[in-house]
Length: 453
Image 1 (cartoon, rainbow, N blue to C red):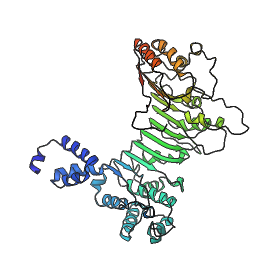
Image 2: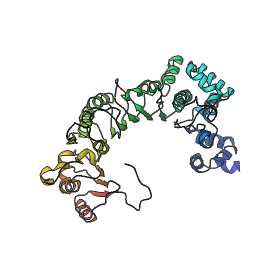
Image 3: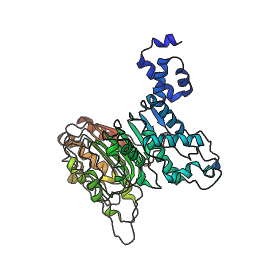
Image 4: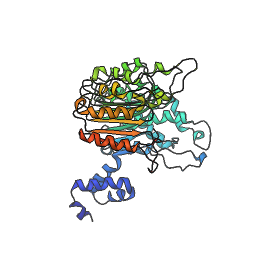
């Protein structure tokens, strides 16, 4: 069997291993025992993408799989060649970390070697048997957050070739995010520790500047996705990042302007407004679609892709005594001269509580005044209220003049809305005459999955 496998090109075996990793993990392990050559290829497939698995709480009757974090750490310590092959890590484990004495000693040894001992406040937490799920009440989810961040830092400190990281920041003390990693870097003098890291997804739910340690740890970071950024207390400067995604974002106009000053190399930017806000401020103090566009001024000549989603921002309830709310909608990105791909939702362009009874789309010419000349793809998404059909009809007739490179317009109503099929047929035929394809991606009742927008 080994002889036959030795004749197969490495590229084919690598693809087989990747498919087995998705569908049949046990077969992948068996394959690794066939020969030394297959072992090297299979191990790479096994450890290239690492996901933490935490012990589940038996109180609620969940299964209790073995926690893999201590084992991963031990394997990486004893086999640096395996640790070097890790390309992706996700620390989205749930449940409590329950350690044996031997496992704790492994962690203590690792931290001693790295010059970042186990924090005193975690000693009792990790060793006390009363903290075991089902035996006591002294171990809480908040404590697990601290342990999770600590274990993540210790493990990724052993994986210098890591390229993709998903990191859940502890809500117990979010200011300790990457703290152990920074201690290791200072103690060993090995800077940067994550020089190969190019893609990071950060579950934050706190001030965006808490991501600043990535500037030293991962200077070659190219793409940063922050989930739940809540304001800005200090500058966040990641000059090499070209792709920035902010989802569930909560910033004032001043904060978003200050934030974007720290990303001078930006090429792609996605902003998705938060559903709930951390403050009791009236939403007039929170950044609007046009505020974000204005904040992008320093990079508007180089930005290639922009996505703005503000539907939930408009849907927030009015505070008593604040009076009517007139949203500062997006009016123009026409001077974004390099922009090729633009995604906008209805909440960015149309006042969902506005009165459009006497609206004349031909006079307003909204999209023609809005869009930049080099645009190649436009997406109008999550449409619900407003004269979007009328505005689109007017624009299509002028698209060749306004956006001569435009090829595709994606059109999508909210999932409960119904497309006017007669209008869609007419606009599709009209757009084809101007070299533009209309793609209707509105969800229907026949779709298998309901998407929560």
